[in-house]
Length: 336
Length: 92
Ligand SMILES: [Fe+2]
Ligand SMILES: [Fe+2]
Ligand SMILES: [Fe+2]
Image 1 (cartoon, each protein chain N blue to C red):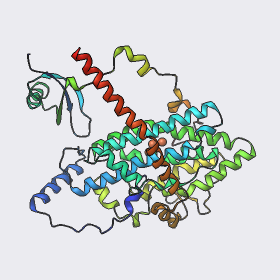
Image 2: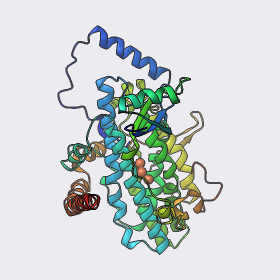
Image 3: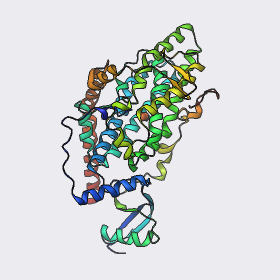
Image 4: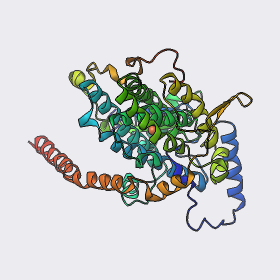
């Protein structure tokens, strides 16, 4: 999902150091806690692999929230009405908040905020492939709320029960805030789908462009997801990529039909035996290309983040200078 | 209590739940504050983890700032109920 980059096998996959008896015992105890649905908190013992997986997952999720502001930010100044502009700003502000909740959850695992930001800006860290696609028309803003936030919700609801306490608690806050994002998107799509022929054409075009990239948000098929089994055992994940993707398709196809929109998949068909929609093969070549850095907007997004960081430098420095000045003033007042 | 500063006490009732403020203790140092907090607030196994924080380290909003900090500002579009989605649209 927001953490598809987990499925890139790390370079030189770690050599397994033999474990001593104490470590084996600790790991068994740890797994017993997980199996008993006892949450893991920052000071509890945890296997190194668990910690590392969480740092990667939570930080990729945080980076996705941050980079995810960019495609929508593209439309703030061109929102069609003042109401739409206020809503879009509120949504983008929420996404910034989600990024910050997640960075602070990640820091409980012993990684610093500076390191995390550095990893994003250097291109070392991943974020969701979906944010490497452009927002060409206003209809894209509607489709993002409806489908991109919709897919995020599908993924994030089970994460509220993730075995790591701080991550689960951040997810609870996020999910509570997320539901207006999806509804405002659907409202935009609905207005356009019931609008002029030109508006209908625009919104169908946006759906055509976003459909497959949205399905890619759930990550590679289970057979290619090398970390899924371990993450499920640790209850970091509760459902596999394919399970969540299927649920999502089942949920949104009727929502599209309700508006007379056509899902751009000739293989999409209700399967009464399975009780699910069958759907075509996701273009995985494109997915891997985008994850590895070659999507339509990868370079632009990173450049924007780097520029924002550089151009914000004076603000960070001014705040420090101001704090110092206030401290000195307070001291002078106390001495007087 | 001269020389015994005030510590605010936060307790995590069990794993999975965030630390919650429960009250405060006076103590000569943080370690003793922890022990006193355990005796005062966790006599019946109410806690899985305790934090004590010097009260002097807490910066709080002031009642006078209430409006500027918390005024609702009529931003009801931040709530899902603001949006008119037909009731037959499911999973939304
Ligand atoms: Fe978000
Ligand atoms: Fe969102
Ligand atoms: Fe999200």
